Amino acid sequence: MISMRYHIVSITAVFLALAVGVVLGSTAISGRLLSGLTDDKSALGTKVAELQTGQNGLHAKLAEADRFATSVGPLAVRGLLAERTVVLVTTADARPNDRDALVSLLAASGATVTGELQLTDSFADPRKADQLRGLVARLQPAGTQLPTGADPGTRAGGLLGALLLLNKENNQAQASADETAAALTGLTSAGFIRSQAPLQPAQLAVVLTGGAVDGDSAGDRAAMVARFATQLDRSGAGAVLAGGEGSADGTGAVGVVRADTAATSVLSTVDHVGAAAGQVVAVLALREQLEGKSGRYGVAGNAEGAVPGIVG
Figure 1: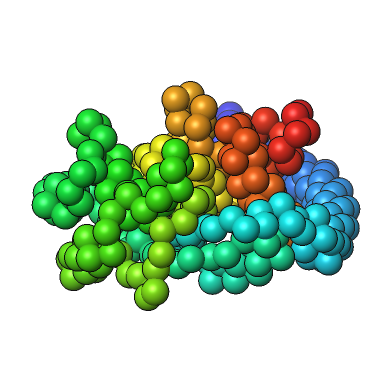
Figure 2: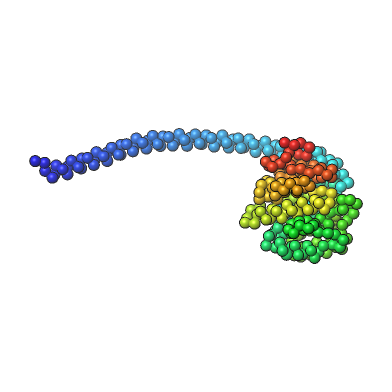
């Protein structure tokens, strides 16, 4: 007769065998799994090292290209803007180093920078759009006409275009010195601009901005600068909007302009002004504006070419 004790011993033996089997099986699987993971880790480490080496090589080539562009830039633009005048407009996020390099190249091209003006953060703030729109209407010089566009960027571009640029038909100032001083003082007092005196109207304009715009209102801010620059171009003999890395995507002013065929038909854009080559291209594009042409230049996917005259 089979006793209860026999049953208990039998059941215990079965469970013990199962436990031993599980342990042995999991050990074998774990060993193979760990071996596979180790191999994968080693392969990934090798791939990362290869990519890092490639990246370092690309950075070295870019640095060398930048040094080359810095060296030949003044020679490439020499005399292109001789006896021409240029006004420089910067946004709050424009890099000082880009500004300095661009001013130096403009001097090498023979151009005279007649003044500089900075658009503050408040200028592109959508929460202050109504305030800016109303102020622009009050500061409009006599004899000038603001654009019909209702957005504040276009209207501010019309006002500042009349103050900063000469009439392209007769090369004469579009506003008197007193009107210009009053309007600039009004915009400065309201916190929309900062200007450096003396500031004289010029034939051409460069709008220098940063890269991609961050924040909840990034799109509105970028559109504000884009529309301002486009209207500024229409107010004189020509203008170039030059931005840094990321400016050509959807959150950058250059990208906003390039998405608007009406804007790109008049305004030239450069998307890599943070590089020495981009600064040279900005001057070349400014020269092209004098010939009534425009283009999208740089390294972004929506650029039509690297430099004016070379498409693709």
